[in-house]
Amino acid sequence: MAFVLGYTGETGKSLVKELSRRSLFKKIVLIGRREVQLDKDLGPEFEQRVVDFDRLNDHKDTFEGLNTGFCCIGTTRGKAGK
Figure 1 (cartoon, one colour):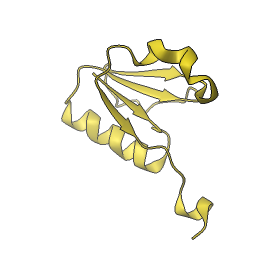
Figure 2: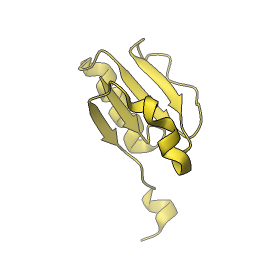
Figure 3: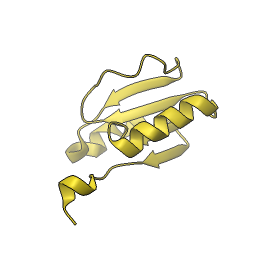
């Protein structure tokens, strides 16, 4: 079972698409600041959970049972500048 942080950005979207295509995990938790509309092609193994990253200790249960993590948190080159 795995989790993905930053699944709404370009890198995260690409990762989620690839994870869906390969079916490597029986459950994949998409962790973010807000709930978003997921691609309709994602299977039932995908689940969204909303956390407040400023109060991450309050969300320890979100990560229980998940043994692989992917972090795609960042910004685009256009927003960051050089």
